[in-house]
Every structure is written in C-alpha cells, then in structure tokens.
Length: 98
Image 1: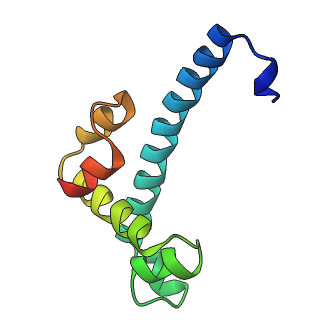
Image 2 (image 1 turned 90 degrees about the vertical axis):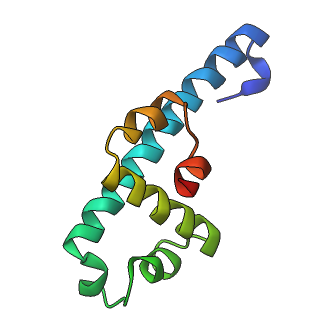
C-alpha cells in the first residue's frame, strides 16, 4: 500500500481501521496463549515454560513475552477484559499491569 498517495482523510480512516484490527489481533494472540498455556503445549515443544517458548520459538523480547503472559492471565481471570481490549478501553500494557 502506498500511503503517500492517500488523501489525509483516507489515511486517517485507514489508520483507524488498522488500529481496530490490531486490537482484535492482540486479543486473539492472548486467547491463543491462554489455550496453549491450558494445554501446556510448551512442554510438548521442549520448553520449561510458556515464557521460554515465546522467547525462543516466537522471538518475543522478554518484556513483550512478559506483557502478553500477564495480559493472558487477566483474560483468564476476567474474561470481560477481552471486550475492553478490543474496544481500546484498555491497552495491552494496562491489561498486563492489571
């Protein structure tokens, strides 16, 4: 996509769309991690923890892996948080801190 050829209004509309998609995808990542954790699939892959699997197999940084695991725990404990994440009412960082 050649963003430089978009009008300002089209660029902002496109940005709004992709940020909404980004929140949905982030939520899906957390839901996948929740199920991977529940099944302990990291053990089947030879990792001692989900954290280690995210670092080594999926190449997340330590801080990114930590944030996602903590946010995943929030979704496990408070399933309604998923809607807030998708809506943009809370960020991944906020979800991680909660």
